[in-house]
Length: 162
Image 1 (cartoon, helix red, strand yellow):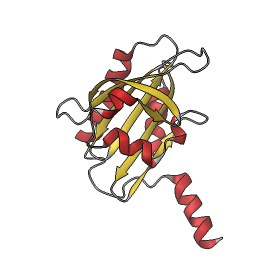
Image 2 (spheres, helix red, strand yellow):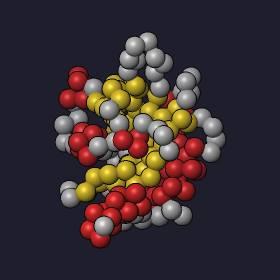
Image 3 (cartoon, helix red, strand yellow):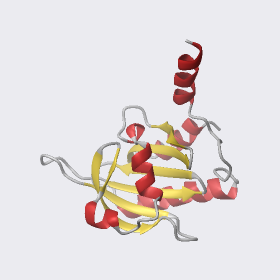
Image 4 (cartoon, one colour):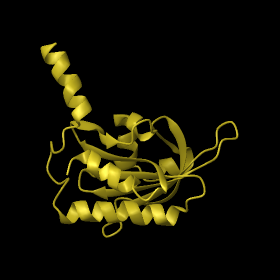
């Protein structure tokens, strides 16, 4: 299955407005696949660094951003064995609705889901956890360089050969 297939699977029940599969290692951090037109497609390497970084307290005080959207961290067990999840909520800007986000981790792969308005974070956490668990059990995400993002690959090809 392509990485986009995993995103499509995460979106299939209609409870999510956005989802993404993100890869990270010391040399490369980027979105491998994401819902077209969503927030997560714009996640930056710096934002990935904050999610997986050693400072596990700073984002409770300062918040974090995902795709430039300001968020608050509700619960962080992303680096805890046998949990590997984080619960986040978007911050309201200009009176807009807020949304729950869950992140699951499988090796060097992050699974992100953002619920639609009114979707409870617990269900999102279970969805992110289940997909990350599947990826871990499949051995996906534990070696560097897996899953080159097709958009990035096309961009790199055009830069090198264009």
